[in-house]
Image (cartoon, rainbow, N blue to C red; front, top):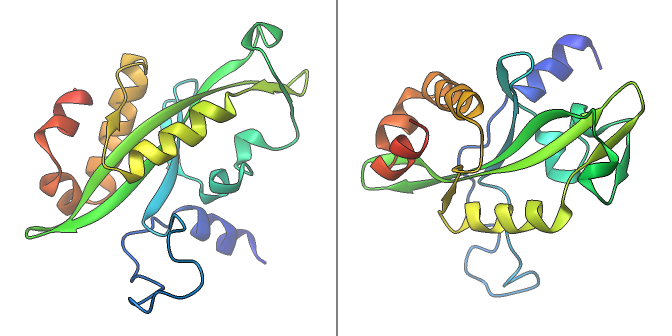
Length: 170
């Protein structure tokens, strides 16, 4: 795979997919579908935000080649990143950002260690899928980066989104 293809894949954003069950009620009914969720990395250290679908399976660029520690205090020099779980739904106005939940990750690249709370990440993924907005614990700079990214990535999605989301991101 060429470098162009891999960077192209990282910039894709899952908009909306059809229900894979098509109402037939067979195998997999009741399973949570992540097809309308994307993962955005917010990097306040470099002042950027970008889609990295690898985070869906704990394989984002920031999560690779580090050993995760069970306690944040074990990664005192870790740089802050946010993995933001963004769910897109459709209403009468069209597609919109329905759920947005940011999960902290700390990465100490020189020492090849990192911290993240798996229960928090799973909870935030679930809350995003249910249309919740959970960003109040994020620092102001990171919320600002996320807001700008969502606005610029797809203005229609942003314009159709709730006032709650817009206010939460400042």
